[in-house]
Image (tube, rainbow, N blue to C red; front, side):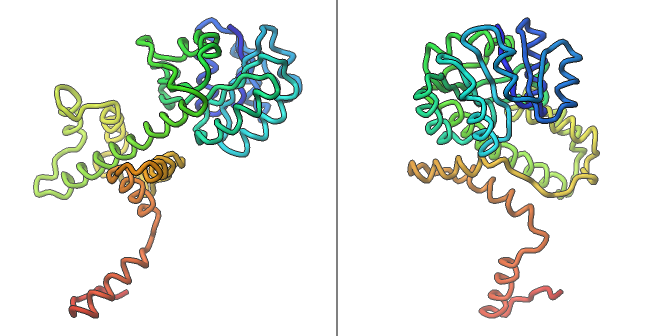
Length: 301
């Protein structure tokens, strides 16, 4: 098939390479010309001029896959390119977008005669070789037309599928990321218990023992092995600051809206927020209150 990839960051750039190697004709666009030139050198066609992009696609309907920062940036570029397209052309958003954005965009593009799909993509920097898990939202006919693209991006085991109508793909990916938050928090807490115990075992060795045959084996555990191997048992070079992409927050919001108790995912999100505090005023308040009502000792600055 033929498609355009818009956005050549870590995910978009790697996906375009996997698609090209899979036999598809890939046209790329990026605001940074250097990234476009790098992909042209690999055998793709590309441009940094958005207006030129639709004319570089010869197949009908045209497929444009966006891998830009979620939110306003994606909206702006979609709105710029949509008037340049023809009825039946397909717009795909593969970024970490909020599912409500998909529900808003789909009818807007449908009024212009365009098809829209949302694809939640998981695989990170390893997807270029291992393949990408894809959770897809949209109508079945558009899914069927684009399926050769999804199949090439997926692992050989075919880990992709239509989750439902517009927004379903990003909704499932959002919950996927919420589960990921909880799993990562559990690993982090477990390793900290081990590190502070009287035994203080070699965490790399522990991880390697767990890798095969244990109930807690996983790809995240494999990555823990890599991390301890690179940075040592104390991870001394890594600051205890954990960012978030927003999907954990959306998962908690959805849980509350649906009256679903999700304490593990919620607390794992709050622990990420706590990691960003050099000092905690709330902890100061707690210490002061304990001293006031019970005379409990408190540490002073």
